[in-house]
Length: 429
Image (tube, rainbow, N blue to C red; front, side):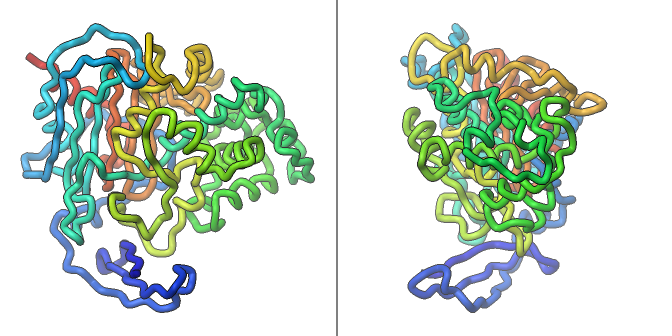
């Protein structure tokens, strides 16, 4: 069986086909085949690159629009049946205009150069609308569908935080005790303050660990487990609990803690505790060698950030799976709840220090594995190469997920006003 992956190089996008022996690890030769670039992909490649970060950059006040034609598939439902996941109760029964919603999303994504995008809207636990845009794989002429899986980037942190908080509720993990003690790791540590970092500090990015961009985006390690272990040799940037520093290290460390406490591999623990109870699917994916059904995300050669991120940003899933995850954290009268309302409420308490100086334009702050926005919505965003993702539980009772393969918009936070405009258009008139 041939393994294929896609890379960005100086000459554009190349398709590399690897001849496989009985085991993938035995591949030793490669033949490069240059494919004539599609005009849409050429635009995508030459656009200014997206920063490799899972932080939410300052939100701009403009969104791009275009009148170009895009490949779009939509499904809209006005059902008001009993919810299958717990959500905030709402009596909003307005008709949702899917075409109007889709027009706004397309104008900000595929119409300005993204390869593909997918969206899902949930109301009262019921999938109200799904939409897909562009090509899942333009080189094989595969159109994106509602089943296309996209990279989640830091939206992945919600999966990790839910599993950790379940174990906190069960008493298997102590939120305010040092994580190293609970992993039975005694050191020695390069910085003795590491021994005082609690699980709460990790969940809230107040551990003092540095951003470590070189580790995650410069091929500093081969796996997320190595990323976590390397942090034990770091000198902290601040005393634990005193400052906010968004770092993927925190969630890789939580992945090790999850494995230590459950005795399961990280992915298996997430599947059993988070995915199966609400009937969704997701998987950890490598930077290259995506399986059919995963959206193509163009990547520069020699990179391995997906492997390095793991619990912090390595998952792929459909927009509806992501929306169902977020909706299952809402408080509601019935349905499956991954965590009780009190626990989710604790996760939505903002950190006691500024997340940025000056404060971010959209007023975001952080809780325990959740991003909290000034308008009362909450969820998470994510950004890595050729990837933008966001899922929000909105005050109006809607849960909206929007996942993108491409470099537009430059700042993922710009998708928040796009969602606002799309929802407004859907309910206009």
